[in-house]
Image (cartoon, rainbow, N blue to C red; front, top):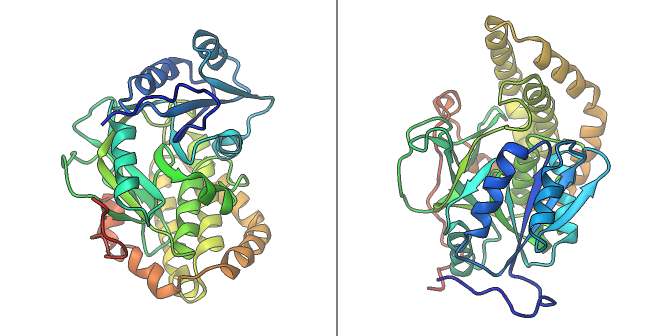
Length: 346
């Protein structure tokens, strides 16, 4: 059921929607129009612009004074931009959505229904469809393979349609809901990652302290995908994905699992590089790997801090992963039945 926006603007909204923009002109207008059409109305929208030159965020804020604009003087990446938005937010809940993602009218309502029904859960993922072909998935929760390679479950596969909610390894930052205090208490996104894998890193750290993430298949967005970074196979995306994947593996994998799966990680990296070679695309991944290796001292320092506070052991994390290599190579959806940590309140 739709909730009305509070009449007193001094009252904090239930949800702060954070949209990080960078040269997002072609898609931002559609994204904001979809947010304005949400049936759940107890919200504020915060635009964080990372020093774009297209003026789209400024134009949107001028057209709609209700929008809150944070204009950064430099590009702080998705990680830094989201952190800026969350620190400025007033809502208990933070909804993240990419500027090239278009939410269905009941997207926020479905997520908030789940938050009320499962009060022991504080992070939720959405069902993402490809904007160009909504019959195919852009992702249904993030999956972590035993090799330490994360992926969006079901990417480019046929949309299975409505299905039961369940537990996933982590939520894609392109369309998710998280408790603001939890996000800030975890230190937010790791800004060293800049862009790509920062959401997996956060989800992994949540798991390490005993938090879980549910995917809500009825909460639907249509996603263009990497619209402001040149596409998922652009040099920018491949460089950051290669570098950050290594850092997340080193930083977050608990000790026993780290030594058990390190050979798998190395072997899978070599296999992926062989695939890049067949496409003549070795430049960006090679630069990313070199940057990742150069940053290993800092990654291991971050690892010490991350592992010091963990409550979940290697076995618990291993159970949350997929050990079937076909899941990784076919990018299958992996959703686990909800464990009875708490019954729905309704």
